[in-house]
Image 1 (cartoon, rainbow, N blue to C red):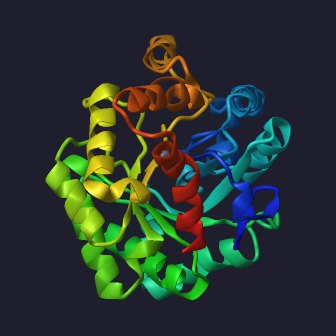
Image 2: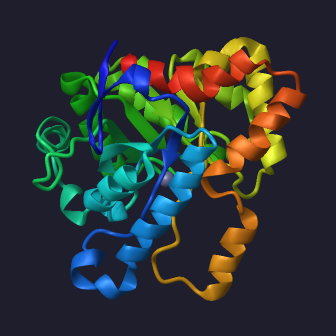
Length: 311
Ligand SMILES: [Zn+2]
């Protein structure tokens, strides 16, 4: 038994249920809401977020991990309202995505780790809403600023016990480099999930990561470049190879609440008409057809996310 912080307060990990490991509700950028609020339709983000997650809840989604950080315009009040309105648990993130603040570039990781730690132990922006996971992002590779962030995340992991979930460019094998830095920091790789790992079909890379003891986030459904069917074949091959208790699935989806050309919005909706339910409606049925068992699917969607947080 363990407790995890959610947008609506602490929950027992046994209450997480069916969990999508990497999603967003509202995506933006640091400072936009304050300076150019007309660029983000915050009210639409809330109403559409509640609508989509209510639908998801009705088809069995209990929890999402919202991996939005400060530099992705994380708005914890939006997350809180959407969680309350939809009944879906939302785990909130601290950490930094790819828009590393310029001011961090010369910083010591030991001066950044306390910022993350405060968001885990005290709360985010004075709200009392506490982060339950640490997000880091490196693309196309690990830049000097990215390395500072990775080390700050690792040190926060060590002192708070909070797990780390990464963003990678899988085709560039960025997970390998992230693991090197985490090993150098001496953290437990069982507390690390290497994300966006289904943007590649390189099974050797994926098995190499898993053999280091990390979790894999196969979290870009339906995605581009690699088809969703190919992604699902990889999931099945990893299950067959004995890695089924180390994988988590998700969409990296969000509500389209920021200004976008109409064609882009239409293209997005055409690519994923199922929103947060693409996996439920398409991927899990295909896994069953490939002869995965229901208990193997329960590992992916229920037991693995829970174990990731329980350590
Ligand atoms: Zn994301």
